[in-house]
Amino acid sequence: MMRIDIISIFPKMFEPVLNESIIKRAQAKSKVKIYLHNLRDYALNKHKKTDDRTFGGGSGMVMGPEPIFRAVETIKQNSRTRELANSRTILLCPQGQPLTQKLAKKLAKHRHLILICGHYEGIDERVRQKLADEEISIGDYVLTGGELPAMVLVDCLVRLIPGVLGDKNSLIFESFKDNLLEYPQYTRPSNFRGMKVPAVLLSGDHKKIEAWRNKEAVKRTKLRRPDLIKGKDL
Image (cartoon, rainbow, N blue to C red; front, side, top):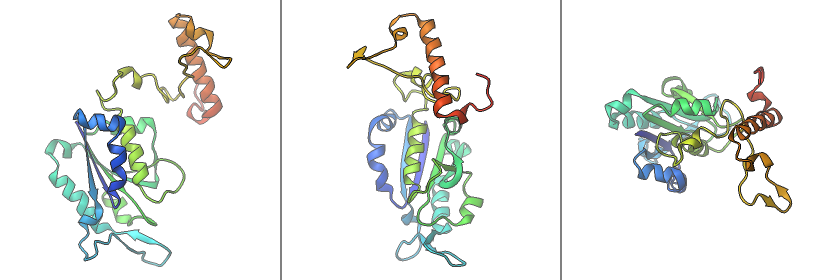
């Protein structure tokens, strides 16, 4: 079973996402345990403040190191030995490495993940240097905080846990398999307002169907995401 601890100053943002669909079912089946931690609970000051002005001047506030260090250290102290031995602490921020399916599969092998959601103008550099094992970004744009990226990462990871998806083939035949986008998909009716399903998909010839799907996957990737296959012989 995987354990995911999420540290945020807005933990209630996660509740609607974690209590719906596949993530909800995964928790009910004890495939994953997800814990939410309010960073303010680890602040020692009177007003439970987690940010402060940046040294050297500048606009905005920066999240301080003390509450974050205390939160991670407390979580690790309360974790089981097996979880701690296979634990990774991840900072969600725009400067991190891009989240890819390959990276998600790598992270899904860990028993324990601690996700730190940044906020405001940034986070104290000492968190990056001494606490985070890695930094992850979900795209080259700036959000108000790391909460939405953390939700995306959790959704991406949970579906990779064995036994979470009802159909095990769903993980095999999906987008980004072998760095190719997924082939076009169709369902009933076969003729909708004059738009017909390709005849090969109705033929029952599985070899021809597989060949068509591979061809379409390559074509779609070349058209929409050529960066995924640059330099590869297809």
